[in-house]
Image (cartoon, rainbow, N blue to C red; front, side, top):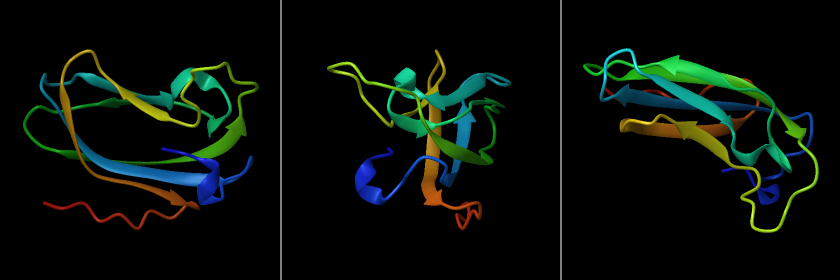
Length: 105
């Protein structure tokens, strides 16, 4: 998701927002820097899902340099993970701290 061609640099703040729903009630979705190498988000979040309605998430992250990369790694990616299927919609990544994403009903 994050690449150098969108003008991000270390210390920039980004806002990630999306609507999500899990297939199992109260199941957790983890949001984190995939492979933690190169430039990516600085922290992680754990969200609790619902299997009946979409919940809306918005979070601010600071871009950090995780260090050198190894050949074949996917740099700058943000991972959303759960061992069970889950649904996403209205995904938006923005530079700055303001979320302009309006969730659709």
